[in-house]
Every structure is written in C-alpha cells, then in structure tokens.
Length: 120
Image 1 (tube, rainbow, N blue to C red):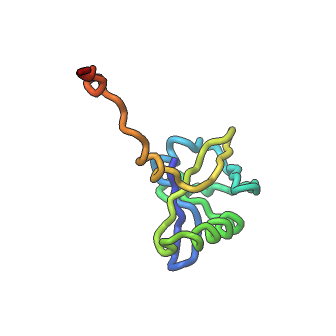
Image 2 (image 1 turned 90 degrees about the vertical axis):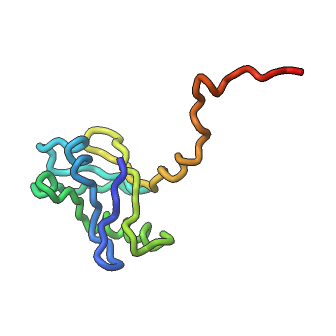
Image 3 (image 1 turned 180 degrees about the vertical axis):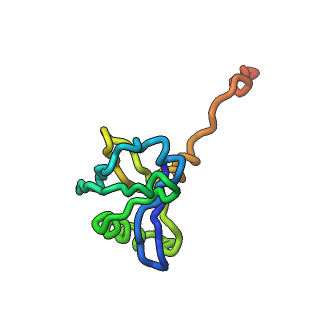
C-alpha cells in the first residue's frame, strides 16, 4: 500500500495511511502495530480516530525517521509517498515508494503483438 508523510510546514507530524488502506489492512480490534524502519523495529499505537476519519499514525520515533527521509527528498515540502508492506500479523515494513520505477517496465504483450514477421 502507498502511504504519505503528514507534514505541517517542514515538520513531519505523522504518517497518513488513508481511509481505504485503514479499512483493508487494519482490523478494528488492533490497538498497536509494529513498523520496521530500515533496521529499527518500533511499536506504534493506533487511536480510535484511526478508524473514524483520521487514518494517521503518530509516534515520535516514526516522525524522526520520516523527517530524515523527507529532508533527503528533492521535494521536502510535499508529502513523501512510501510503501507500507505487510510483513506479518499487525506488522509492516516501511520503505521508499517504488511505484515510479514500475512505470518504466516493458509494455505487456498482447496477442496481436506476436504476429509472424515476413522473411525474405
């Protein structure tokens, strides 16, 4: 899933997961999740507001890690997209968004694209 840093000015204040991601990947009975940030593993609490219109994660350690990533970004004032990949029960790995690289793959072959060539 793609998530974004949540910023106030240049300060990173949390991670915006998005309403559809919250519904799809987070059971309502979960009060905390584990995040893997590079080599660091942290547990972050989820507030009741997470499921009622504010699908955001706030944790000082997470914010420090996100701030470092945001400061290295060319667009440090724009929310930074990140990949949040499930890695176990209530556990996720957070890393750089790879969606931009996926756009540069070869186009899919269609049945008509394999027409025999004429040999001379």
